[in-house]
Length: 413
Image (tube, rainbow, N blue to C red):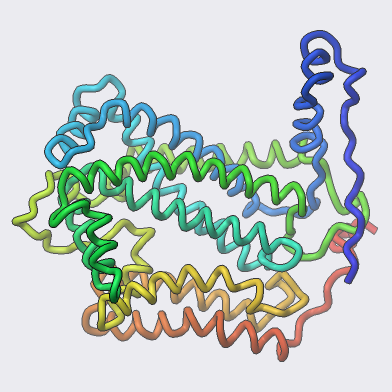
């Protein structure tokens, strides 16, 4: 199927600008470029609320960077000083408690919004041609954000920080051949101490700015290839699209206001939903917490890790659960993008979401007893969806007919 030519963009000519704006535009056309990409840029007219999460993620990322820089100015990256410096930020630094609360809440809601963003891509087939690079860059962002979040979780150096690091470093050490070397690189010695905290502080700070760079690449790819839409069909005429301003600017603002209300409610009224109580006590290598578990956004992978008998096997399964997403554009050969028109795969995708949640619950229960069986069945279904259901459905599934255009589907003939 040939792709239709995109609707022409309108830009403000340099001659129409005067004063300082005209002087800058004649030498570096940033104003017209911004207008073309963020004012006149045309998007499908049928984008729903799930497309708000791109703007939400951008705003939260900027908030995380701003608060993180101020927190880093008052943080001591040593095993002896880390917890005390965090306490000092909370109790002695003017507004420090607010900065840290915003940073912690932002980290949790950033991962939550990222998972919703990922689900949207899975449901509407945003990984299909011509947007494979958009999908792959988004997955690189997911991995980088998860690594950044893990490194940040280590920095308070409370009980859960220490023992979470202990679990992960030992799992890495179980890799055949190179495991001990990798574990030594992570820990910087024979035990978790100053070198480990300092390395993960640098890693957390560095990755945060690298994420910004990859976000820029991700947004660039969106503007080159255009945005997908709930119908999964390309715009054919200008009537299928609307300019970014004012339509989606106003829609994104409404989404951001709602998100800010949720953000504030969690930060001020239910802060303990987002952090383990054991992490309010300093790290003690001699006292193991009763329940060692990661943050909620790592629980599905923790459930996979514990559902496999060997440490290396569990680590491999956890890594494979992310890596298999990179192969998705080549596993799903169906010409239909959106799950709205793929009844079998739509049911399968909701089953995938259920399996992901069950893995998280099993991880919280340490995959013991009946939860071990649940974790293994959920893990088996998770991988089967990608390597069995999608390839078979691509050839056998009877899809619903696609509308002739976005405008026609919207009732605009």
